[in-house]
Each structure stands twice: as structure tokens, then as C-alpha cells.
Length: 170
Image 1: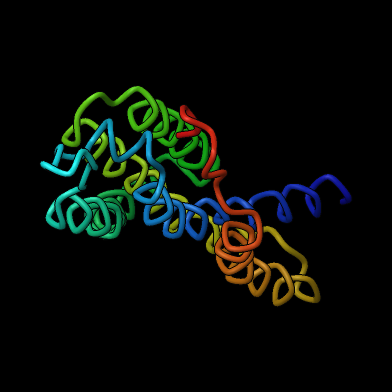
Image 2 (image 1 turned 45 degrees about the horizontal axis):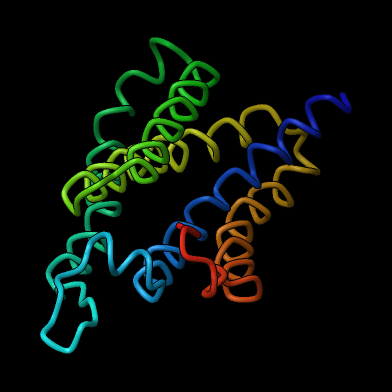
């Protein structure tokens, strides 16, 4: 029984990545190395990331989350919850790698979209799995912790912001 409780806690905290992803995307733009990598050189010698890049980066993940939700729901009854969580984890790894290895803004955009797919899958499966496997007296706690984890991810990014002095921090 303790293993299921720890697993429910782990699954609940997994959506911290959504809160983290929302805040981290906007904080990256302030890093000089990120602006140099994805920005456009201005006559003053500074790099500027165009607003439409930032807008695309901000909107692709939520859009992919919505699409992924509609795609994954029909497969839940056929394949179950645990394989979906595993698939979402692997997709998230691919999305993060795409973002980290991106050399142009479109590749970074693709990485954010792929990670959005993973978040959409996790956000669909996790509350269902928690609701089905937790004991009734713990169900409310873990479902509330699931939503609280998103805010904890945002809070962590605000309290522990990305370092701004390192050249290769992103």
C-alpha cells in the first residue's frame, strides 16, 4: 500500500514540469547566450529575439497539450494508464533534448511542441490514474496535490531563477 501512495505522490508531482515549462520559457529570453543563439543582431550590437518567436514559443505548448489530450483519450481504455505515463515520459525527454540541442528558433519551437504533447498526455492520464488507484480518503489530497504541483513548478522557477551570468546556461 505504501508503494501505491509513493507512486501517486510521484505522479502528482510530475505536472510540476508544466508549471516549470510555462515560466522557464519566458525566463530563457532574458539570457544573453539564448538571445545570441536565437536572436537577430541589431546595429547596436545587441541581440533581439523577435516577438513572433516568443509568441510562437509561448503558444505552441498549450496548443499541443490540447491536441494530445484529444488524441490520447480514445487509447486509454485500450492500453491503460501506465503505458501512457511511460510514453509521455519518453516524449518529454525527446522534447527537452530537442530544446537543448536546437540551433535555430524553429527547432526550439518543435521541442516546446513535443514537450507540450507530453504534458497534455500526463495532464490527461494522471488525475484519472490517481482517482482510480488511490484509497477514497487519500484521493482528494493527491488530486489537490496534482494541481498544487503546477503552482509549485512556477514557484520554483520564480524563487530559483535561471542564472543570468553563465554564458552557456540554457
